[in-house]
Length: 213
Image (cartoon, rainbow, N blue to C red):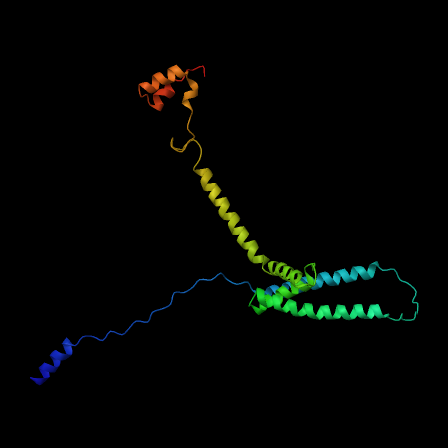
């Protein structure tokens, strides 16, 4: 009897439901550019261009006889100017680092931007505003592949929409989508009032248009 009661209890026991794990929604992000590969490609391209430019400059120079001259003494104004330039250069390097850190958190992207800033753009100055402007230009250049891809996708989308719009046009348009015809201009004011007074439809009025018009 006890065994039967135990069997009944076992069969009537509610099953234990294990809590199901909730998975967080996966956020889809725009794929990042491979800045390491872009850096290697850009560095190689700029290095080749720089080497070619130096080679052209060397070949363009005419050989001259070596003349031994005494090194001119640097005057006080020149020394002061050089020291100021060195100090400004040091300060500008700090500003460049600040602006690079402000425009991106990706170290690989920052490295590519710095490469473009150093070798690929014409600098507009050494003050903070000029450096910020130049860093932004270098960033645009670093991300050019992404912008070109987005522009191409937008262009293809626009062409697709234009094709659908043209496909829906033409003589198969419904009367509601066609430009309304100014029927009144075909008749005199008296004839128009006559037809409207008798509630003629547009189709009836259109049939009544004089053939000479």
